[in-house]
Length: 358
Image (tube, rainbow, N blue to C red; front, side, top):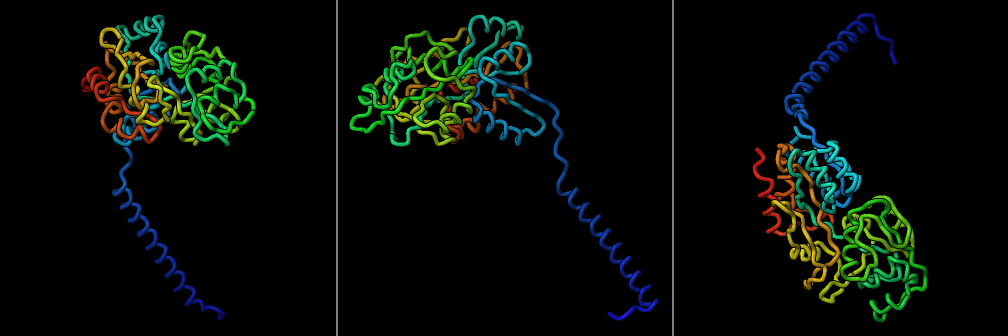
């Protein structure tokens, strides 16, 4: 390349300075336009914490995500630490609401009432079917009666080709492998709902309980149950349908009181809830299921997750959030996450209990 003269060098320096200055001005204009087109996000001015049921985690995650989009100034968090832990958090004032798969005991209710300075109430918010999930590659479409499920869960039925399982699955080839049973460790609302069903329909020899008294190995949390079933062949356990569906676990069709083996779906689970009775006092929406009631097409193992809040002195932030979860929008997409929406009549009662949010 030819060498530049001193004059040429001077001209080049001037040109470069002018170009750099023009670029800086243009960049400043672009930044100014961007700041005008994209205003700073609205600051969070209030926080709301809930905790409890792992069964409703999928629904709660979806609700919080959409609610935050509509109300960016309100931040809601939810810790899925189990129904019992959620109730204790609420009683101790560590959370504004608790998620629970079972109603509070009388002792818990009394403590929660003291915490509220009035009445603590249960609001049913989501139907979470309990899946009997299994890992048995050679047997799609497994069918189980309550009595057979009780036999497996108590350790009386130990082989997959046992006569009890064979009777439920006519003309099916069943392996002679050992049945690996898994259950929730610690206190679990899902455990209580399952044992309540088995006690009423399958000859379960123990009282319904949040802690598992039967056979098998304990697993922490619903996600833990999902993982162990995914990686253990010849296994069976129970977990909320949302977890089983997301993990693509096989789920058994369970015989209902009408004598039908019904596959689990949001639609079949919703049918089971339609016959539930409200048994709470003073307008409290605690539900009771009659597992012996013959409802055609109903999947029989379901649980309703409650949001526990203070009734006497409503927290406006809690009411604003739960008003959304109980809205048509909040209930409309639950089936996408393995849940069933509340029946219309029950949803109407929930909205009346919530009242105005202003």
